Image 1 (spheres, one colour):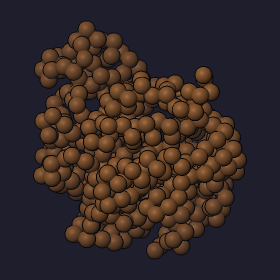
Image 2: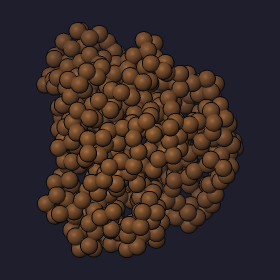
Image 3: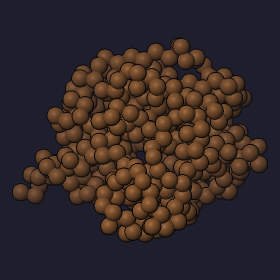
Image 4: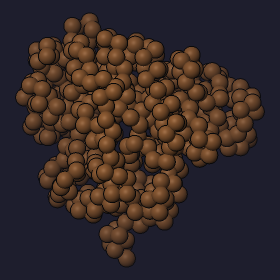
Length: 459
């Protein structure tokens, strides 16, 4: 492999994950750290660490010139952006190309094509992939009303440049369209610097199903199956599983084929995820968006296929072919991932920071914990609240649920509050057990949830 030293332009668990993949590949690692991350696990594990600025991301992890300069200064021949921060920023891809540094990710062109949701919808439609009824960009609330009259309420207003649930508003009543338009456009402008909106038909009983794809520069595009990411709060994923449960096999096959077709049509190179909305009532799926990066939930695809997606990212970035063909991908069993966060769910998922006094994650056969935490680690206030990803594998879904429930019971964290009690509550619910999940499940379950230990403290 030509890549010999990589700078990891990220932090937290994904930085640790990339470092461990590099260790197996014999690639040296350079960790960039803000002032808040000088004592982080990634800083300890990397071959070299370089400070890049103050704690706020805008002054460190989001500064493209600083990141690329650090790569050049340390002799890194590649940059891995992980997810979040600069992972889907075409400016980083452009800067890497100009500096002669390999970006472990897709091209700037692909980021721009898929980063604009309206363009992505057109490309999907041109490829013959089902797309929800909706609009092109809208400039006024009256235009939104015209679209709503045509496709029928409810509708969702979405930011063209959006992601992560920002710039999105569900409208169920026509009288609320104007206020929703104003709020969504303002949020989009604040989050992305672009207030452009469009409107889509909103499916109430919807599931969020995505397909993992990987492409190389030799024209090969394959999928690693599908994942159900329906358990969400404010459009942020909480629990994911692979493969998606209760999906007719012909629909599953068509969805996977659509993802490969779309990625192949644009000559996509790298790991990416094509996301779909699945109408549980009509048994139909529709293109939602494509994420041009590795996903937080990639481990469950690794668990059911045995393929290391981070290592494949390095292979294709190095100009090599994928290490496998589609007919060599074998799907076995069922995997579930729970995102453990420093949040208090019953207080509207209020984040909290502080020092971790006790950190004892579960261990055992077919249990994986991707994390950057340890006893004595101080969770900073500046970043995403993700502490760990707890992943389990079993021969079938029922046994995977049982294993996850047991693992959550054994996951001991003291010093800060976490989402573990709520994750345990969801996993043990009748709805999750029978697979009756949709994007509204968290809202349905949360009002009746009280964490046992916190209830004891309050009594």
